[in-house]
Length: 275
Length: 302
Image 1 (spheres, each protein chain N blue to C red):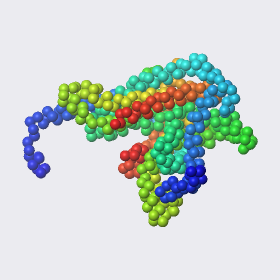
Image 2: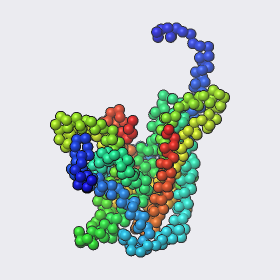
Image 3: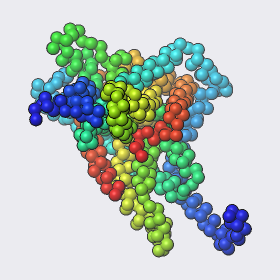
Image 4: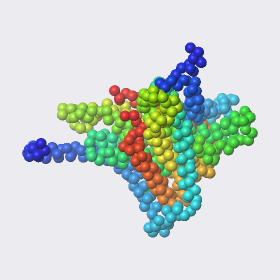
């Protein structure tokens, strides 16, 4: 079959041919290019030897990676971000899971409104949350502390974990727990031995998303982190406002690599609970 | 029937059963408490406190002066005008370029469409700052696009593509487009193509069938995507702040500026309250518009 035959064949049930559709394919391809180009251009550019922006780079090198790993400030910021993200995962995952489970199992009349209340951090503009948390932390003397940052990020991550776990619980039959309890298991034991193993992949996915929520977060970190506890995103944002330093390209590539790995991991295990 | 049920005496252990049920429910609800406390302490209480601050004058008396100033000073009007301009233009451009892509994807076989969806998801997976950096690299005076354009002879002087409204719009559209495409795509996938066949059968041309049948059926997805984009745009901070280069001042930038530069909590809080009210009003209006479907309900195909 030649290319022209391919063009002439109808693609819809209303007999529109591919040739008549060509403009649509072109527009769609252009929009897709627009969507992927920023991500795809950062990676090769970060291996350029030049101080100036050129694509494709004339000479390849890893000098920007070296300058990142040699910089004490960037290393400290990276460590802060990783610690905050790990703490956020440890706080938000159990809290979000408990809340989703409690609301689901209670069959309470006000479970719906309560869930809406717990999801408000997703609705309120982040800038308002940022200055609100900043104000509270000034009063509580928690500005520029790792714990304060992790708690604020946990507040942002709890709704994410809740949504993931709640959707897993929807397809889970709670009567299984009743069976376990009628056989003498305590409520906690029934949850840990019967329910949790069946929703565990969703809980892990929620945890990974909580990690990324914190690691990626800029606005709250801008207000409540600083000094020795300045996050990677905060330093990047401030660097971007001044000038374009190619080191940021190297950091960006590393972030893309880590994020993609984690998200592919969640996609991979996300399907396991649903059966 | 009901009378009989009412006359039947309660079982002897009815009260104990009720007490046990209440006990069980309280125990389950106690599991919600830690999350509720965290959100109340770090978000609800501070935001309420900001609302209180916005109602105090600089001297500490109850007053509406921060809101009054917002009403009287033209600079605030400009900020809100810019915010709405950027939000509306972003939503409009997203609809214009997102609709053809979503339509094209919904017509492709499932497997090819899933492959193409990676292109839509990729921006969502990439850190916001990374994408903002990438746009700076592409768009600035000595950036890649100006370099290519000049070397190909398309234009002679470097174009001002960033640190202005153009750059802001390119950045915001790129961030928001997936939020429009995802609900729109799942809505289009659910449309029964037999309706189009029926329209053709009754003599409609493919274009006419599209305008009269397909487009109206895809509107719920388009509206819910557009509302999400518009609401997210209203409170957008990072991308406009970097790509606007201080020339495109949206409400969020102004709030941050009031705190970082002027330490004016009252003014910042008042702006924040107005932003929150606008956001919630938009969402409620959209909910009304779309009836019982719900704002987020449009995203899922159930």
